[in-house]
Amino acid sequence: MYRIRIYGDPILRKKAKKVEVFDDNLNDILEEMIETMYLGDGVGLAAPQVGLSLRTFVMDWGEGPLKVINPEILGFSEEKVIDEEGCLSLPDIFEDVERSRWIKVRFQDEKGNVHERTFEDYPARIFQHEYDHLDGILFIDRISAVKRVALKPKLLELMKRSRQASKR
Ligand code: CO
Figure (cartoon, rainbow, N blue to C red):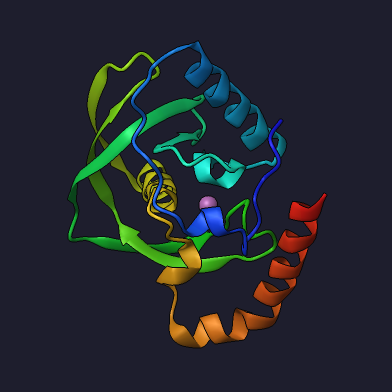
């Protein structure tokens, strides 16, 4: 199981690097990310959240784990929906976030094969959230400034926790 990086850890703000090598090592990383996601009771987990600067994430919206590598979002629906989100890197914070209701995506699997799919509703929301992590974006960046100001004390607390964890 990986240690989950908490808000304040600089890797969460970095743009992750493209995956170039599709080998057993990559698959081991993805399997361990899946285990870490389940142990954390999450529905998605991106590589930067476990300290790896790689454009990959895992997700499970109730149909088993999916490994997503080098994703691209090819199209977003104009229709938006608002729903509550949380994040394993922002424990105990839940806020409404607006997302496109559906997206058309392209990604590679662990063998390097390319897939194109359309996701709607819940999986589309998870995909957009995890995709953001690869560009250093967190869901709290997508809430109103007023709400973000209200979160300040909680965020400062998380930053303290993050600093302590990195010293261990
Ligand atoms: Co997240």
